[in-house]
Image (tube, rainbow, N blue to C red; front, side, top):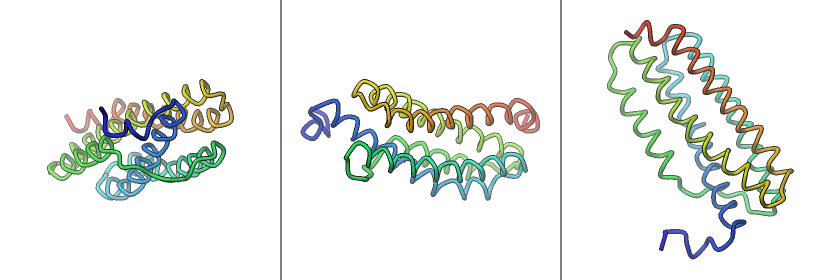
Length: 167
């Protein structure tokens, strides 16, 4: 039996639990971004991370709206996955002395975060549709689209300069 099996009996319970998970994750990401912004040396990377922090505030607000529309309490549950991703990012970034290599490490860490969010939002969007909650699905899809766009921007930054400078 899983850790949450007594609390999760229905697809609706699972949906709400995953909402709580990504809500926690977004809040942790919002807290972690200033440190990444501070350490970044590439101006475009710094600007992109700053813009994404603002975007993350919108993700949090949309999630709060989904909770309300779905009739669920706005609540976060610990997410060991994002905690691990952020801890690893902090450790790697803290170990890099060369500023150009540091920027490449920051991009890689940010993409690991984005990929986690993409998996969660993709699943939640599909589940919301399955539960007949097109209103919730539309909000979750907006977050998913923004996470995909952030990942694409990070890839472009890496491929058009940051990785080359680091090498």
